[in-house]
Length: 162
Image (cartoon, rainbow, N blue to C red):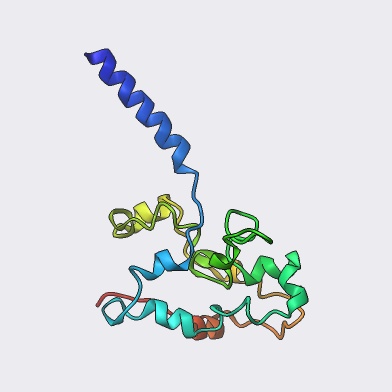
């Protein structure tokens, strides 16, 4: 019986290691479920009205197939999120939560999300100035400079419990 239990524990351990690094994109609708409404600080609604939500829609038609544009105007471009011609592509249009916070397949679970350390271990990313500058830089044809603090205030959709 002890051998059986050890084998089961070993198998579960191996599967957990394999799964630990396998974070995938789930799309904004999954995030919306827990981050919507006044009780949650209107996080989803603030994002939806902000500058990132319609980033894909702001592209010219020709640019909607340009990988250089899609890398910043979609979520998870060619990393398991947006992919040109994919049936699920529209699910990842725009700069959604996971563009800045990382693929949410694992950390979206309430049992993990309640614990910041667990969330970070399971794919959650805290956005930084460097992350923002991956898109907000001189490579962009519309670049007019980037003041991190100013733009962070414009894109702010955070919710802090009091």
